[in-house]
Length: 159
Ligand code: SF4
Image (cartoon, rainbow, N blue to C red; front, side, top):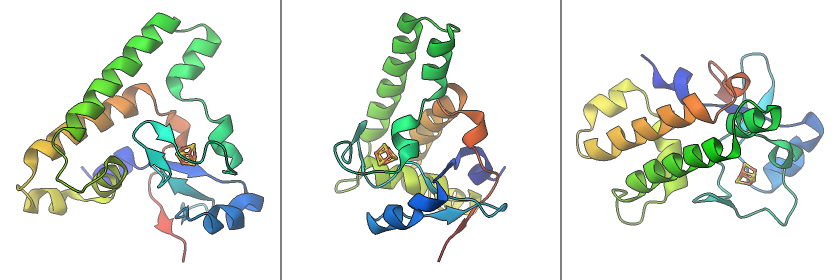
């Protein structure tokens, strides 16, 4: 299975915010329908924190609610259950962080993983432990946190 279809959410940016988004250094991509957005994690993510929180960022950032937040908002999940899911996600994230090569950062490692295809993974047994831990983390985030509507089947970089 091509993992790109499974784990590369394209978060759409309002057309009128595209230029400003690129100006702050966000890499943008077009999906097959021509809509444009960025892939998560963006380069402003540091661990679990947005480093552009106090500055301008695309409006989709401040308006975004993950699947867990949406369920709590609708009353379909208790806040305690939501906190338990966040705790588990953090444990899985920490498990990945513990085996990152020296000098690597989580945002880069996640992006590299999401952009890889099967031949990249098959050809590299050097860091199998990292790949397996990252796979488990991404599957958990896909299942619990990522709204299904944000998952694009494929997307191409915008020049
Ligand atoms: S909220 Fe911050 S880290 Fe998240 S996508 Fe927006 S700019 Fe990037």
